[in-house]
Amino acid sequence: MISDESDEEQKMNFQVDSTPNNERLHFQQEFSCKVSEGSSDRNSKHDLFPKWHLPVKVAVTLSVITFIYTFLREVLHPFVTANKNLFYKIPILVINKVLPVTSISLLTLVYLPGILAACFQLHYGTKYKRFPQWLHTWMLSRKQFGLLSFFTAVLHAIYSLSYPMRRSYRYKLLNWAYQQVKQGKENAWIEDDVWRMEIYICLGILGLALLAVLAVTSIPSVNRSLSWREFRCIQSKMGYLALLLGTLHALIFAWNKWIDINQFVWYTPPTFMLAVLLPALVLFCKTLFLLPCFNKRIQKIRCGWETDTKIDQTEMTNGF
Image (tube, rainbow, N blue to C red):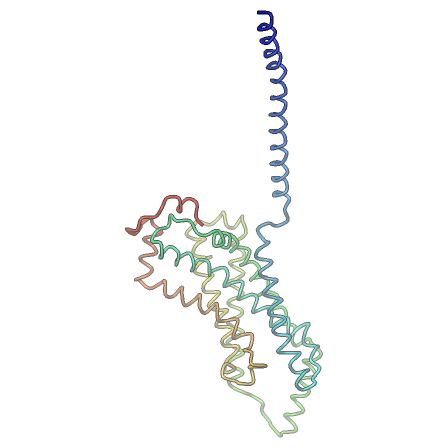
């Protein structure tokens, strides 16, 4: 009996002693979890421009690739083949060829995910299936892509306005005037060049004005003052119109250079030819989706209509 009572007392003492230890351990675990969660929240809050990381990386990558490509064609090729020193072109002329390519490419990246989303919904026949994570992230970054496109377009306009102020341009004017006098020409007027420049500058100004409207409407205070229908009309319809004007601006700038063999330096196409490929594809797909056979189906899907194909609920909620 005495031994049994002593055993019971030891068990009770162990339980009493262990209870505070368990509570202390549980409290330490909760405290460490809260500290880790709080630190992660603070890191996310103090992260520098988190929504701009992807657009800025893409813009910088496009700019660097275009700069290297243009440098090889415009500067290095004449130096290697004809021993011409054209390195003075880098600060203005080369940069001003990089800026429009970057601008129209970034503007294309604003509307390309919408085309991919429409293809995704047409393929699965429903709007309830979640987009892949990469497409979802891309669509959330469209505002930043558009603002970067507007920024580079403004820089392109400023660089273009600075052309007559360059000393090299003044020397070229003197050389052209001397050659004209030497050849005995009274009039150096070239009708095609005049029309080409007048048209593509006009289209560039109109496209930049539309981009300015899009940039203003992306300001939160202006955005809140618009209805959803007004905002969608500006960002979608005017955005595609700006992309169309930018593409036409590049096409008319090229004019008859598309068939000029001298433009293909080292068997590489000129930059304007590469710049308009993706925008032209996006505009073609958008025009295709405006046809009644596609447009009606897309509108029905976005209003909640589904095809007969059954989709797994886990795929709808979890996505890819």
